[in-house]
Length: 182
Image 1 (spheres, rainbow, N blue to C red):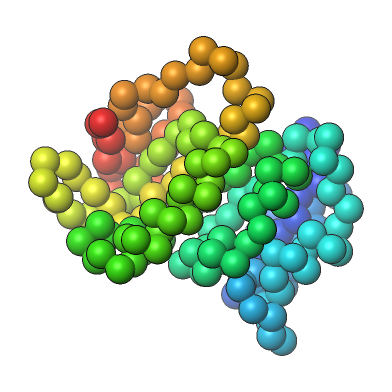
Image 2 (cartoon, rainbow, N blue to C red):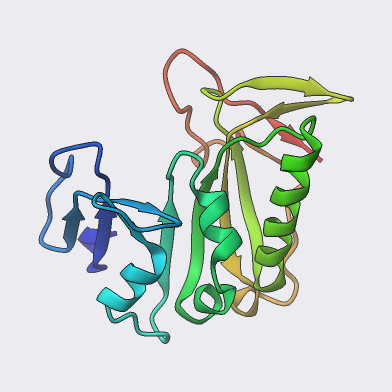
């Protein structure tokens, strides 16, 4: 994205510096969380610090090891709708066998569904994998969303994903992709 001229904001307090450098990449040694402390900023802090143009096709990519649920629980989703055309997330702690947690997660996913359409899903095999009823599941999955108003009217989802050549790549060499069938 940086090579294509996009400004890339990176946040990670667990490392000293960005793994890659580029004139369009800005690295912050901070975590992003639901509350602020000496090493954590909030999503609202980022939105106030940077001037996002709502006419640009801004992309939000998040992998924050479980903090995403609390952030999205508190977030004003109209901000996402206004400023982001695509959102790429890694959701953690997804286990439908834990009912209270699942109810919370479904409520958040329904908020996404109001303005965003999942366009791709990929299980991360480095999480916990399990079998529920007649389906393989994972407690960590990656979802790509596109804002619904930007999709063609005749857009339809595939009935299979998770192991599509030239789109899905294994998260590591030792564990294969898990196909997802609906």
